[in-house]
Amino acid sequence: MGPVIEVRNLRKSYGAHVAVADVSFAVERGEIFGILGPNGAGKSTTVEMLAGLRQADGGSAAVLGVDTQRDPAAVRPHLGVQLQESELPARMTVGEAMALYASFYPDPADVDELLTLLGLAEQRRTAAGDLSGGQRQRLSIALALVGNPRVAILDELTTGLDPQARRETWALIEQVRDVGVTIVLVTHFMDEAERLCDRLVIIDAGRVVAAGTPADLVAAGQDRRTFRMRLPAGADPALITGLEELAEVDTVVPARGGLEVTGGRRVLPAVVLALAERDVVPDEIRTISRSLEDVFVDVTGTRPAEGIAS
Ligand SMILES: Nc1ncnc2c1ncn2[C@@H]1O[C@H](COP(=O)(O)OP(=O)(O)OP(=O)(O)O)[C@@H](O)[C@H]1O
Figure 1 (cartoon, rainbow, N blue to C red):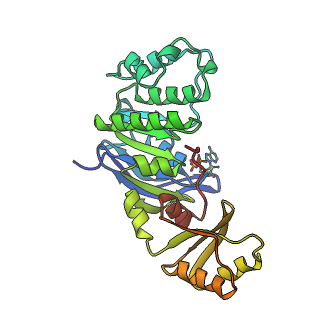
Figure 2 (cartoon, rainbow, N blue to C red; figure 1 turned 120 degrees about the vertical axis):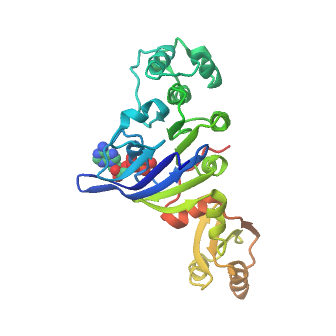
């Protein structure tokens, strides 16, 4: 059996603006597949084309062997989609919305069970307009899953959720994956991607700039080193400029009351030596292991959105 999802050279422009220039990837059955990228990179446009909700200018997208650009209706019963801006009528209750969405599918999930799983059982009679941000987010996930889909596309899954609710949502997504649902997850959050995704792509300016498992992506840049240090109070700011000029140093940026330095394998001794030559001894040095966030910064030149402190 081939991949559950196959995207080949998708392209889409809005007028003169190229939103998606060239995106290809494949997702295997039962994977949680991440799509990461800075704001405006083309993530939402990509998944909307993948779901057959938006017409591509070129390329192809197939879900469960069905070309979603040519025949979106054929795959709809098997596809659950949580989009960023799906608005329900404000007066429609949670129970009504679930019943309505369930009616679109031949083999819907048990609505009560799903609402309980998502912590919305108490809100059955609550109007969509009266839900809190977190409840609305959980409802959009419930609506994406109500059709018992074989493939679920979740865009900005945990945006607006508090740390506790985020963890619960992650556990829920793993449960959904464990029953064999293939999941495409669009996310801004590196911790979410690192925790949940089996494989991922990073998209920048409409193109795939990195692809692989989180571990592979992190390992690929292991010739880079990062450390943080605190300089003694009153240290000359010109020192920082001096450090940036060292051959081993890539960047020096302020971080948490100190400096974060990134460079090659020998960056730490090079910096400490250069400082010692000026009679400066750092108060504290801490090496930082490379994370998916560092990969993201390397390949996109942009810092990812801050995760909610947890
Ligand atoms: N309907 C539209 N008409 C015109 N331009 C659009 C439209 N939808 C998106 N764009 C533009 O296309 C680009 C890609 O947008 P898209 O929403 O796919 O990016 P994204 O990676 O999902 O961003 P975000 O993380 O902010 O949601 C952006 O520059 C956006 O402003």
